[in-house]
Image (tube, rainbow, N blue to C red; front, side, top):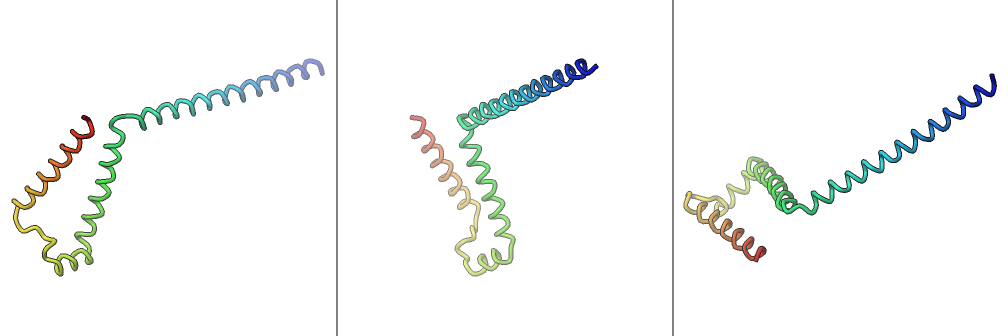
Length: 110
């Protein structure tokens, strides 16, 4: 009976070691897959524009918060030159910025 229980103990130890190695290999595979996905994301052509867009979203949120805060209202009341009076000025600013972005993109891809 002791030899049988000794064998089962040995089999349990071997099974435990095998399971540990299997879990370790699975962890290596998961980290390897995560590294592959990370590399694909970083080297993607859309990665940098996505980061820039997210940055502009945060900037947009900060500017709206500043605009509606008491400090922002105080700045607007004391510095009238910061306010845009008509839509044509806004259109010309937007078209200038869009033209600059497009010409810069053309310069980069050329």
